[in-house]
Length: 192
Ligand code: VGL
Ligand code: ZN
Image (tube, rainbow, N blue to C red; front, side, top):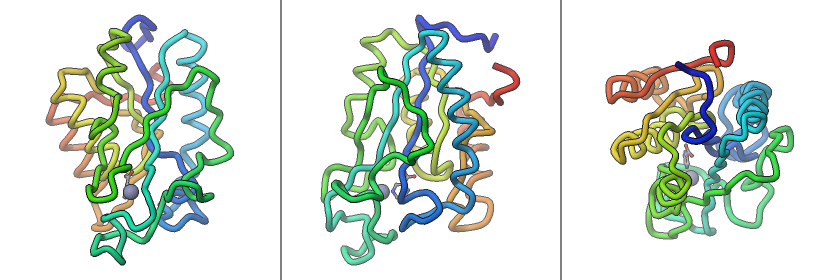
């Protein structure tokens, strides 16, 4: 059931950027520990000839989500900075399709589907099932998964390749539970 069908399966790698990982301004504890597993997923999808998408949080300076603008977060993933760049250990392949989100200075946007071309590109490629990994489980992974399910895509959560911010303890676990109850399924690398 979980064998890859390159005609209809895609990998979505969410926000593996310096600012969300140790050393960054909004670092997730041990966030970088999932990168080797993400690289294994990338290799499996690339070897199968399946599509690979990589989203990045891509904020203008003084974005509304930043504390100085009244938002909840320290400045992060500002265009043109080190923090917005993908982590150097992430082994993206040449045909990766990049999706930038959070580009609107006045609007918080956690979902990779929010004011981005992702849905259109998935439809164009006749993708039916999206396998999601990355950060943060309780923000962008959750919001993207919900939007994908709402748009009638199947969603597979790659449980060994996601990490939560956990501002409140348990946020990550609750996000996973919410996605599962909304119809997402779970998978780990040994089962693919
Ligand atoms: C995210 C916090 C702030 C995310 C983005 O991509 O999960 N989290 N901006
Ligand atoms: Zn952000």
